[in-house]
Length: 436
Image (cartoon, rainbow, N blue to C red; front, side):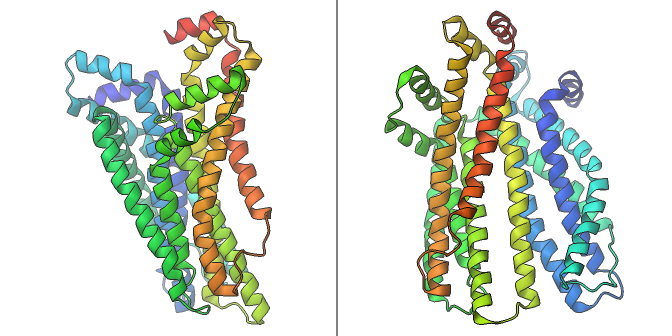
């Protein structure tokens, strides 16, 4: 099956481009931040600089590991779903489920290894640039030199390969398991995340305004709430569609398509919810904290500067990864609908009507994802703001929210419409024949 996996990659390299990009970015981020461990471990590095470097590597390295897994998992899930007929043909030819799993896992590991190797050079440059940022802000001594050693190299390669293998295994398992069994497990995890998230954000009121750990509880609570909403994405989407008053041929067809493909679109909606919640919660809480420190006339400590740098870095990483996941998933999903869009045109729909339908679908997904992501973020922002400033809402205004909405809308609608326009360039009869 390993040889079959290698042949599959050689015959259709474009199918694995999304996985390669996710693995490349993930490995680059992991190696960039874990190179701070190598830097902190050098002889002659003072304790304050070592603590800053180690803390940054630990926090962002953990987030990076999770993001790599989710990014690779999302691309592989779409890949496996689109290969359902091919995998079924292999089973009919005598391949066992275990052999099919080994083939898909082998493909993922091979692609991830290439991505990790390609990421070594950019990670070296990124680690040096990151160290320069810490030195410019006074968090790390100027005498510290950057080091890219075994910790960065081994962690980047190992984590990327393990994430790819695990994500591929789960994608195949999800595709071959019964829907009812998957639904029970997802429902249990979703409600568990919602309950723990609600407890976390509520416990914020047990802290005082000057506690150093004040931001941690509402931030993690908001993240857990967003995870719960994300796991319930198909159910939430169907609930919204049942109450959506879209009219006209394009609107009716968009609602029908979304309802039929709700399970397949759950990955896109999950990405939108997580992106919105984590970005809004982190940026608004950091803004409230910075304004509170400025109003008190205090000078930010090294720990406070570290936290601020980490918060902005985490948000930047999340923005990059979620955009990659959205673009990959939407591109693959829209391209896979080549035959469906061709059939609509043969049935009498104009290219403009087809684009209007795709745009309506993307708009609904964007609005639903932004709404539930905003709800999860507010659940953490409001308790933090009340305890820290005695105000209910932060004074940063809608600027941050509008920026997050703009990025999400541009990634979702832009990718959907651009891909659909490209698909429509193919004559309808050719599109139906090619996809048949």
